[in-house]
Length: 228
Image (cartoon, rainbow, N blue to C red; front, side):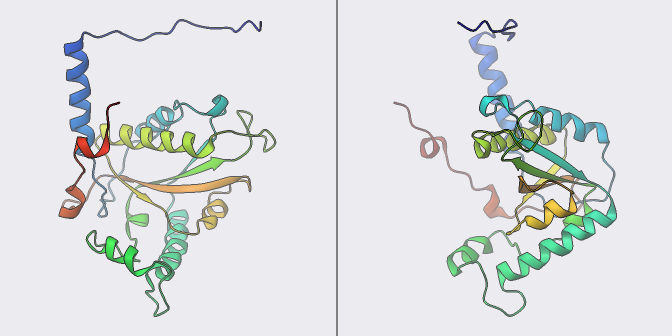
C-alpha cells in the first residue's frame, strides 16, 4: 500500500450551542450580500483582495489540481477594454442596437424585475475586477499538459468562497457573465486552455446605491432542502 505523508486534521470541535450560534450568525451575514450595480470609485486595500483570493484558492478541487486562475484587473485601460467588449456582447444579448435579441423573450422578461440592461458602467467605476478562469489543463504546475478534473464544480466552489470572503470584508460584489467571454482571455493575457467563467466586480457601494426589491425574494428552507 502506498504510504501517504499526512498531517493531523486540525478543527476545533464546538459545543452544539456554539456550532448553531456560529452557523446562524454567518448565515445572517451572508444573507445580507446583495448584487451591487452602483459602485464608488474609492480605493480598496490590495491586501483584502489578496486574502479573498487565497481563501478562494483553498477550495476543494478534483485531485487537488486547483484548476483556477484569478486575474485582478485594476488599470483604467484594462477596465475600459473589458467594458467596451462586454457591452458590445450585452447589446447583442438585449437587442439594444435594433437587432433581434440573443436572449429569448422569456429570459428578458425574467430579467426585467432586476432592471438590468446593456450598460455596464460598474466595469470601470469599481476599483477591481477579478476575472475568474477555469483551467481545463495544467494541474498544479499550470503547464497546459496535465488533465484537470471536476473543473466546473471546483471553480464554482472557489467562486462562492471568494464572494463570501469579500462580503465578510465589507465589500460589495457583482458577478458578470457576458457571453461569449473569449475577449477576457486576450485582455488578461491568459493561455488558450483557460476558460473565462465570470467577472467579479469588487468595491464599495456608491452612497446612493439601491437593490431591486425582487432581489430580496429568496426561497424558504422547505423549498431548497429536503431531509431523507
